[in-house]
Length: 54
Ligand SMILES: [Zn+2]
Image (cartoon, rainbow, N blue to C red):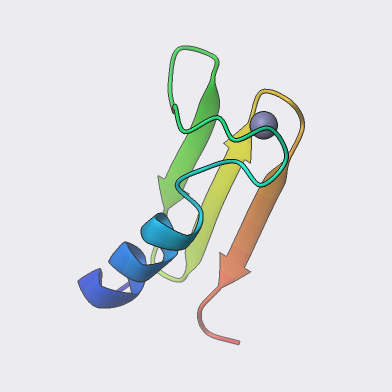
């Protein structure tokens, strides 16, 4: 994934849309960026996956 797109998605999804938690790691949430998949989840159960190839 190009850096610009990754930064845009990180900015958009840095906070959980459900509970507002902005932490990742230590069981708080997950942020994973692959070649074309951006994945962000939160301990509350919220998650988003964006396929930038679509
Ligand atoms: Zn949450």
